[in-house]
Image 1 (cartoon, rainbow, N blue to C red):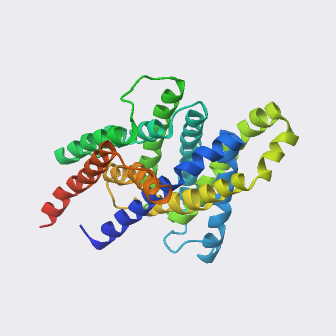
Image 2 (cartoon, helix red, strand yellow; image 1 turned 90 degrees about the vertical axis):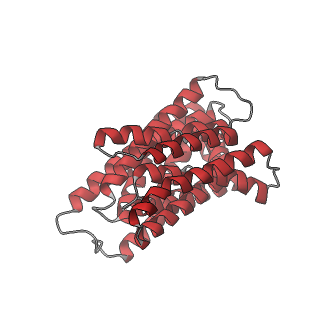
Image 3 (cartoon, helix red, strand yellow; image 1 turned 45 degrees about the vertical axis):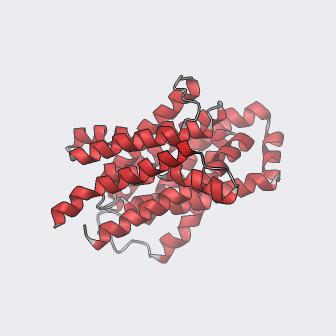
Length: 304
């Protein structure tokens, strides 16, 4: 395992940390503003947060070739389309009553969907990675589902759809990240996600409550706090680190590392909010970390 791969895996770990700490903001912001409004505004905030970095790097990134602008836009549009569908399904699932724990578990099911989809693109996994995925899935269940209930409602089906689309999003990034600038592609994907999320916001949410009451929703400090954190940190920083960090990392291993967002969400609640960690949650955290370590072992063995 070379130094660049280790660096990129650390970037994915930071991505999971930011996502985990931002989950509460995402849940509260979606309930306060509406799922489509929250996603549209935070995506545009993410776009604005990345624009200075794009201009600082010049009109073209040094990584791009003269003919790769088309590839950059194709990658950005496809990433934005997948992100818009997945994030809106997730927000709708939370809005329709799914608990944050169950939402985290169902969303993180991409750790099993990614390797299955990868088989269609000839991205095979070693046996230990499949075992790691299974262990991580058990760990996620212990961590997120505290009532031992796996009954499915509409919100849960939406979250499973979200996991499927996030899996496709990961594979799209796996294909395009070595070809173009990660920062510029991330900026494009947020712009596309914001545009697509604006359509149901304009034609559904605003007419439902009226333009006046809709504008009043932005008058509270809590609304802007959740929007800015989710827009700048979760979108602008974390999703960009995901694109940069996935370069050269097997998509299944990348999905395992990013699924640690559930662990970091629990740890953040313990450190910041004083929430007690149950023995069940501790077992789940230990299994998740063990799965990540196990997934790396054959790479180290092959290097030796």
